[in-house]
Length: 385
Image (cartoon, rainbow, N blue to C red; front, side):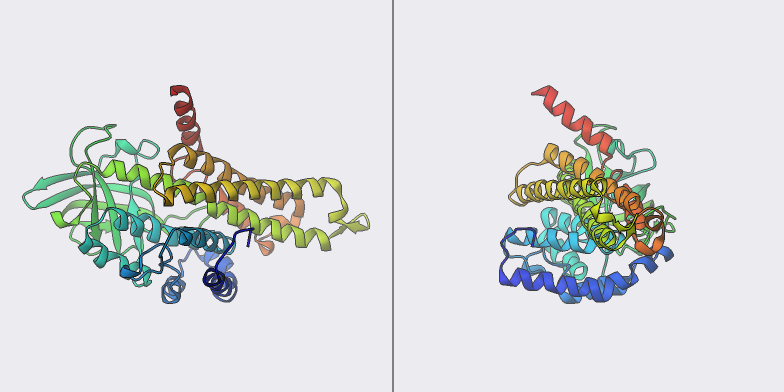
């Protein structure tokens, strides 16, 4: 698949993913988009199949035994995004943004408590960073955590948080010391639904990624024990930066999956659709668009997978992740728009799904740090050398 040398075990897992997508996810993708509903039964089914634990060690219920599983996880996410980008986004928020942060930063007790239920599909997690006045300015968050003996008291609000309306577990970034803009002084905390003072809002009504619930988190004097601190106090922003790097590079995989699906749909369409007495596939302007889509998908996939492989090996990827996100996410939106253009009026209709892929793709140019922010980060790095 895509020129990668896969083991027999990896091939078997990919075949399982394809069957899950074809039999379970793809048939309801348009419906869950229309209704704006997250299919919890499919999340649970993924857990039962072992597909939520590909990046997690076996001691916590996962199946990972080496770096090769990161490649497998990337390929699975690309395939899944080609069916439902919104579902893939929510799965990633739970397993990557919540689960993987617990894996990297948590105590042994925290790992054993929170990871197994998530990768079994019994619980779903989220990662709370963005606030009404702190989006691209991540260090400007106003949520506060005040030490009170063996406890912390949390007050604040988060918004645009994937999975917030349905989450069982929450990672919340709060400022414990220092002022706005300071890299030190942030801390991460593990919260659970049902804690006194913790509330979530209704899912937002969105343009795309509609089956992935996005919403607000409210904390009013939430009292939590110090054992719920994730990582060391005042170092939460450092962990946040590493998490954002992986999220940014990983978000490109969703748009690569979208672009590949759009290309597949277009290829079938232009072979069958006729204009002026001959198939659209015979027109050179159509051929040019198709060739450009293929070129950009291949480039985005190769670079994004390379960057995520670097991250799996423990290398810093901040600027590379910015390049990967910028290129892959814009590529996905462009590919969906080109598919609509090639298909004309049919592309504009919901029946062919490319309009849904266009709506979904646009989000990834905004989330995890806008592409404008990625450009600034890359330029500042180059100018500082």
